[in-house]
Length: 87
Image (cartoon, rainbow, N blue to C red):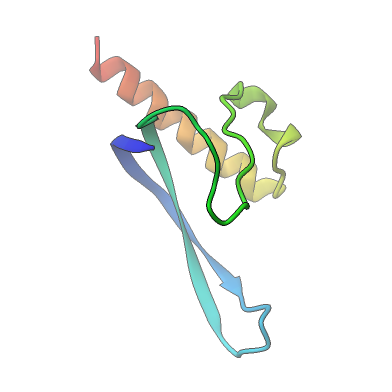
């Protein structure tokens, strides 16, 4: 995917689960993307398809409780800002 617009949503401190001590950070971004071409496969095999979903139905695909609610709320704010800037 080609990123044509991005804006950081925020970050989250996460406890390590690999036996090492300490924390690490996950950064979340809002992005507008366009495909380089049709999806034919992932060399790693982790990604099996690319979906365009209705944002109101995101919990069918991932649900991290209050964290995902906050991420999606912020992403929708950014989408509104992006859409309004294109008018």
